[in-house]
Image (cartoon, rainbow, N blue to C red; front, side, top):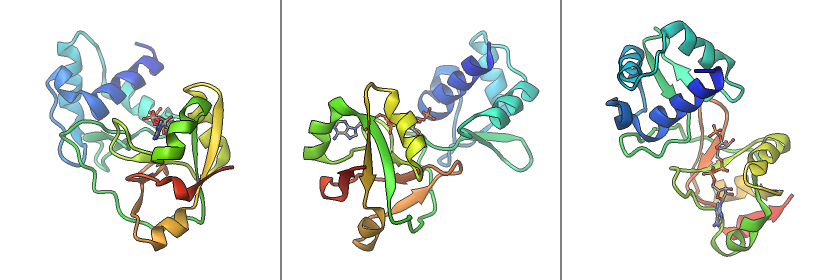
Length: 179
Ligand code: HQG
């Protein structure tokens, strides 16, 4: 497998379908790297700890974290698996955060606001270029500015994942405007 294929495989089992290779994640998303390697082998994929560490450290978006003793691995965010409920620490957000989306979603977003969909949270970025990259994945990108500090002042909770991505449950339309 190429680095990219390994990264996609890790995202798949550590965020979405651990059971596909008979893996258990704890509620914080951690699993034993040896169990991951064994599960991958059962599904015909040959992985070793050095390659996994390389993929983790070279990930452009720091998608994965290793425990300090290098025995455990988890995805930093983006989970949909019911096995996982990351207890991200609440944090006061900066005044505004950004969300990149596709122009075809705007009409629905104006009505519903931003919703998490299959993920556990809505994902927000601190910088416009990152939001632009995220938005480009689904078509012609649009950047929305989120009035994050005002939301926080009104009791909405914000969290920051290990990799710096900001997370919140949902963003009502009144806190959104085109950047
Ligand atoms: C849109 C990637 C219609 C939302 C990225 C997005 C990110 C609505 C899509 C991370 C809506 C969901 C997350 C509404 C939200 N009506 N569309 N009411 N509310 N949407 O992929 O934020 O490579 O689940 O705008 O880089 O695009 O996985 O979320 O377009 O950091 O590490 O529904 O995933 O990182 O799409 O991306 P996603 P996202 P990784």
